[in-house]
Length: 257
Length: 215
Picture 1: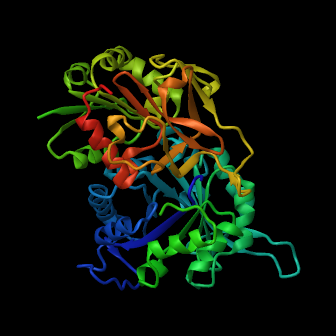
Picture 2: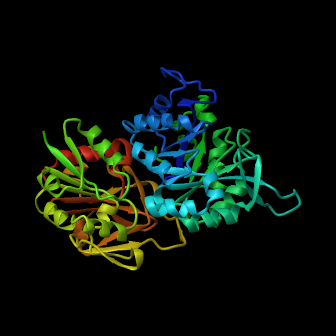
Picture 3: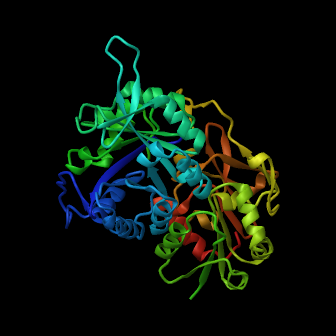
């Protein structure tokens, strides 16, 4: 046997509350990120990612508190992303109990920040989040560019080259989101996932578009992702983590059961 | 109340390990410290660490902790984790070659690039995620209640190669087998992160907190 492919549920947190419809039974407070994280841990999640989508920086302290509470009783890797701009932001989240930090927009505007962060805290805890969108025409060879502001602003940066640059600067892992697929439930952008995974030496987490368990399988078998991330299929209670793992195992993918 | 000192020398986030130790054994006094007297007075010592080996060794020297570690490994249950395991060996290939503490004779080697697993997947570096641990001396007290081939969480780009195979008490494949747990007298050292390895990790920490340092 060998290294397991990872399944990572993602919680979008706004002002300390999980957003997107949550429909769990046996959970006291369905919007409580701490309760949901504990449930995912019990179900066998390999890691948990928290994405802080709080608009106001005044409320960032809420996220620190959430991470602290989760870290008191959940002993699997915890990643926190969203609004991380300074070494101080990283330090605060690590001290709260996060293991890895997702850097997104700040990397686009200040690539050197990735190097500084990796030097100070180690590459193992620096995850660069890449939001990519296809820009090639149907008859052309596939090309993707980096977008910011939730997919609204194009940066002109080529996604494959950008991923390689981030790894050169010290990223220990790439969290790759297809902005074309995010929220569609149509499955990952597999050519994009494959292109990035083949281009970099570090693990790649596929994200954006998962609507069923077969999508997770294809992310690994066709996209060559090292880990697959999904939010809504788990939040809505469509599938449990355990079902997702069983489905992957049935398709000859090594998972932690 | 027994105590465990977690050596805090500025290499990485030690909150996880402290919280996990406390969770594993609520009655143990967990001391996150760089103070020599506190470390030497504790019943058990945990030597964690993430990051680069050069920074690690420099930080230990700067804080005069190499002597403390050399003392602590002589007479009390001692647990090295990840970089804290690698630092115990003789030298590392990382950072163009670094002399380490030479407590367990052996080398720290770099995973080779372009590795492929048996299913044809390209193996990424760091080796990150949950991998199977094959216990070679499964009657050791630290393996109590931990089934053979349990998965633990790894994140590392270098691995240890002890001079004497007897030091190795467990292996993991990536894709070739490497030593992921070393044992030497009262020292137990793991490449994976028990504090991030859920139930099995907590079990291992609990076993450590009950271990008297003998086999």
